[in-house]
Length: 398
Ligand code: NIG
Ligand code: FE
Image (tube, rainbow, N blue to C red; front, side, top):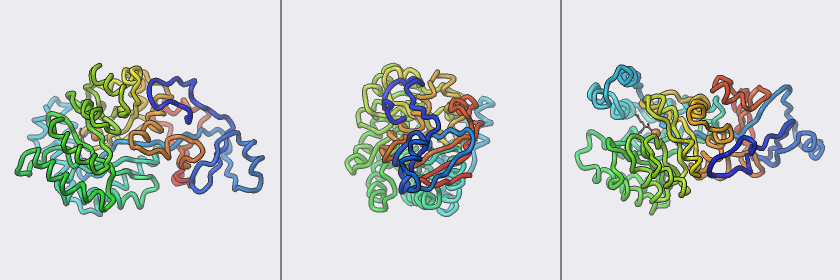
């Protein structure tokens, strides 16, 4: 997938498919990808050869660029109530919603939260995901956000996948905060941002720009402070109402995620920018709402990534290929667009240039399936499981 465009629609005929291929790995990186026999001849006796007997397909390790897997508790009751017809407000009044996960997450020790994050990261790794973005955002006070980000950093040390953390202290105004939304954001920016940098906890800041969370006007100064410190910005944008994606474009965010409510105006704005549009089909399936207008975004020329949004409230599924394949059926995405969305375009959303395609100089992260046709991966909508997963040139699963 190395020669494919970072933006816009992609045809399957543009995919580079090498039959009888070999991957030459050195020091955890891809040195060369090409015809196996030619590589074998060139490297005769100089490298250890691992031969896969039978039909196998290898793809770049997947990148899940949007998750909230550092959480405690469970929101099965929210799901049941929503499906039985209860409103957002009724669910919150019954003790559900984001605030219930905040309470359960605060009740976890850092070690417990680390263990929960590791378990979920392992489940993602087994799907072929070798890089996982993980947001905080269920702490919502300085020490609790720090606990979450430290738990993610510790989990990263134990996981074969790379965990990329994002500070989402601006997930909602905590119910136990005595001041205004503006005061909360200012306090977080002044106290938490310097810690992100001094403890090397994150290089990314996210905010939920929505009626039930923070307005674009409230989020803007917060993001500007993050940018001034050199932090990347990403936005939970246009999930139920528009405004977040315009702010993302205005501030030069790396990505604008959700976009279920985006109209032609927001789509064009994103397409004319370098902001990656991130579709989260498992959140549409979890809530039972419209999908991100992925086809229109691509046709307008946007870069589209696809992620799980794995979280206990809107997206409990945590299945990347399954949810991305469903999005592809509903939105008419080609395989090239789908795979780009979970590999090199997802890398772009995380501002990572060392992964997302199998090409010289890239990390040797890849996923292998026992099949004779790569199309089976999306055709089987997630039920074809990887035969093996490699991270930094080492087999880490199966
Ligand atoms: O990405 N939209 C806001 N945040 C999450 C949901 C979090 C939750 O409900 O716990 C999301 O869908
Ligand atoms: Fe999210």
